[in-house]
Image (cartoon, rainbow over all chains, first blue to last red; front, side, top):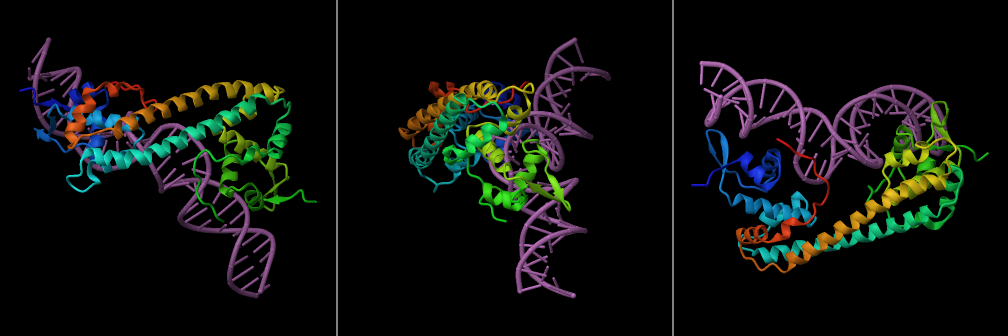
Length: 145
Length: 145
DNA sequence: ATAATACGTAAAGTACACTTTAAGTCAAGA
DNA sequence: TCTTGACTTAAAGTGTACTTTACGTATTAT
């Protein structure tokens, strides 16, 4: 009966910390396991589950989104359908990420052509040019005062 | 004499909050201004300075890096030289960002081809495949236990 | 004169995904 | 048996870039 992994063993095999496993359990990404004298005991298939979590993370999903993947659909909804919904939204976000990176690249290219001596010259030059009109790095709060 | 902007006016013209201005002052991105009965008074060229900060932020620089741009070089180092140093490093980071986004895209494409019904099937499939071997989304702490 | 703003400060809050700490329990090896 | 090491919990800490809060003062408009 190999059906009994301690949390440390699971962590070792998955390549994460025990604290991460407890955290995943806490936020609902991992099921509450049975206990043996207070300690968590896992079936080996917990490793599949963790691998799925890691896959989703690498794909850019947040913990909240992964929880949605697991529990945010009507019972019986196939995984394929769940992925469809979430991956489409995330793909748009990733594309936005790439656009941002692209914009950063052009700004950096501009910076490399800078010929200014003093800080103030550079500031005035940048303020004068329309470079300031590119899209922001990330959403900032609405702001009113 | 237009040479006297209140913090609220600067904020309005720059499109940021007054709290951001105080924060920039606190972390050394903006000079400590003179005061009129306790209130900050700014010369209009503070707006150039803020525009420069915003430019750098859009290019991906952190507050710490912008402070380095301003104060991290030997006095007299031309701005062009400062940008050279910082922009090269940042360009590499941005390229890494784009690679990560690319990897996310392929994972999401994989997710879209998923034909699994149950969560466990999907988990096993992903764990089985080598999909788990892509690079991590971002650096995680070294981890030892 | 009074009320509504704008300003001042210091400290705490925000989001995210965990980690670290503190203090205590339990089990296995020497 | 004793000691080490793995485990338990709840709560606080981490990093980033600000914002929000709480509370007090000064300016401006009516």
